[in-house]
Image 1: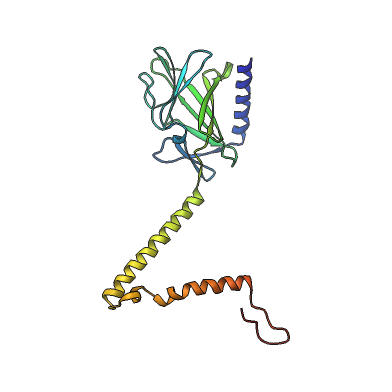
Image 2: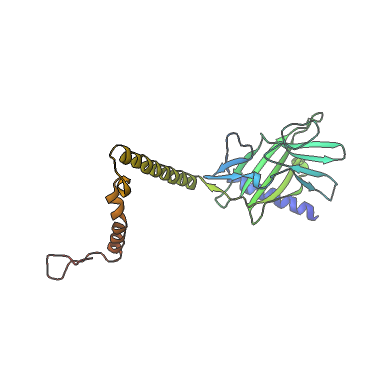
Length: 239
């Protein structure tokens, strides 16, 4: 009864999320990475190696790895494998992963599907991830009736999401720092070799760099204490 209730709640949650879901874009060449609402997620944080989940109710175990295929009999490219004894069933391949997200909270769903050689039955796994304090994934159960052969998992994701805008900002800062280093190296070489400068004079635009600290201080003082017009006079107070 409790298991059925959990499956029902999982199904309802998935349907609510799916009704307002936004498709994510998988990162090219990265099977376990996707961009959702401007944020990049990496499932290697969840499964750095094949994770083994045991279902105590029916004795099946589930090998999970979204980044590299798990061993699943003669099936290739499998992300989740259901096993028991010498029986293996593919619940979905790495390449079939379809990502969706419904909001900006960091929660997302991953749906995979696959068939088992010699079986032909299409099986589907739905993994619902929420933001958490640790990385984990657990098996909730198999669907019933029309949802038979659909397997539900829940997971928590603590790998962090990298904002695309933030990534672009760091790229621009890195480019600026590299350009500044090149400017100083090229400028010093030019001043030393071509101009014959020595000592501090080899620094390009040395007078500007000497006065820069004072300019920064004056700028701060101007912000804190802007100049005011003297009462009854056509002149301004000194900063």
